[in-house]
Length: 423
Image (cartoon, one colour):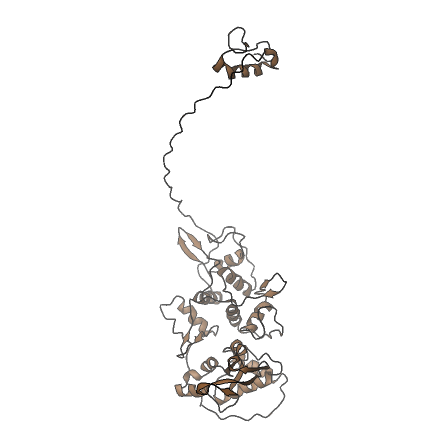
């Protein structure tokens, strides 16, 4: 190991037992808090003093509390507990769960039901029996209830603040822990497809599910953030992703969820309920037969989303607009607790567009007719098969040249009276 200026580690060798990687550049590894800071905060650390939290973040007494691991593996873990994430390397589950329990015991941190079930399932699933030294307790448990999660960027004047608070109380979203220890919800951020999977998985109550060892999607791996939730979504038929030109399936986890796709997610999450889509769309920007028409109009009929009132009895849905996190909280709240004022048809009667005055039309000058060429005495009555043909020829030239061919023998302006068809 070599050091740079200020005792900064420059090079060395680190073995990441989470995934079996070996690294010689310090930039390739992260120091992972085996029990993440955000997990610790939600499990009891929120009631600690600043000194106790600092001691936890730098705990060198328990040698499993801090681990040097591959940086992107640590990033995929984020703040998830064993119910949501396990090291990708085969054979590491027993050690990881054991170390997790030791850290939680030392710092007297709480274990939620899903986390407890994951720990028990792993330890009873083939870990055997081994003696583990019990670490010294670092902090006595505090009986103080930390209370519901609150977000520093959501207050009483925030749109959908009731629904966002409900979301937090249900554990569907705990937001982000900022550097000052506060939590934020970031209500105006768009919901990405990976986060949508996490929302719906938690909305379903975190059902028991073992994610597949091989990813069904080419663009995510078992170490990807929300891998379990995304594969649960796929296994439940809520999302099948896209079939690419080479035949592979992709999920596009970082793409924003548009409002039309959100309707499809919730409709399938609800079990594809029987619903006859209305013959008249309730929204001016969603046409009958358009993509997700049935799902969007089902959402409207339940009052989960009634779009925007744009006047004159007309409503817009904005189907290709990304869903914001505050609106997503409202949609899930109404899905569970019932919406109000569902709509199935349209009373849209916009006024006619204003008439644009047209400039006056200037009449064209009259066209002076031009005479045909003089045919001369080139026709006889016998040249015409019928009287009508002869009369038409006579009428065409007579105004200009008179009876130039001598077809009107008696001057009554009736030509070739001997031809068939004469009246």
